[in-house]
Image (cartoon, rainbow, N blue to C red; front, side):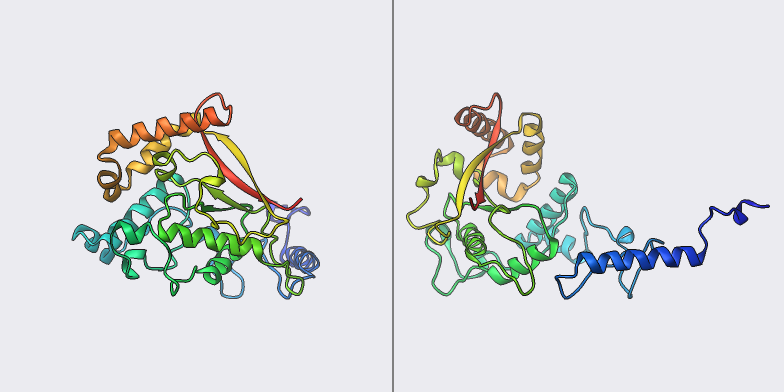
Length: 279
């Protein structure tokens, strides 16, 4: 008998039976929801959807128009190329929501960019909630807006709004306390010698419910520090304006990381994150 006739070899009937069992298990797992997920054990696309193994989820997607615009000096295109290059470097994925930066929403100069958010400029809570929930992350990192940049403030406000949302029971959603984490914006935290949450503007975190707390976690990044420097250096459109050059940026990254490590009693360079939790 040939190997194709072996009794242990799965045939179509056996594969179909296994697929039915897998579908039934998926339904049981998602029985509290109004939908469930299927995955083909044959690694084939289902219901007209693309097979995830064939979809690029990392790196850059350089279209001709974006490259041409970046080459011509268009700042939005340049930043997009930088974001995609960094994503490739960091082995991460980028989801572009096409939300315009503050300068394209009418903010001009540092006084406005680093000032109060306009009353008609709402935080993009709905779109961020939708995209974040779709990805089902373990943790969601949002800026503390230490430097008061209006875009960072709006992202922080979106995180605060998520923490204030009640638990959904009809269509169970994520419990945001425990998932939402705030990071300390660099270089603003370095420039301002940020120490505690009390250094934030009054009322910055007032929307967080009383039963939700933030606690600092220190992460030893000694073995990743130079990689962080290389990653920041990819944002060529920002380096000279913010730091005056790559060398000055690198010194700042190292000095700040060492200072944070000292603050957290870490034997090396560190970053600090403020994790949310509900006791």
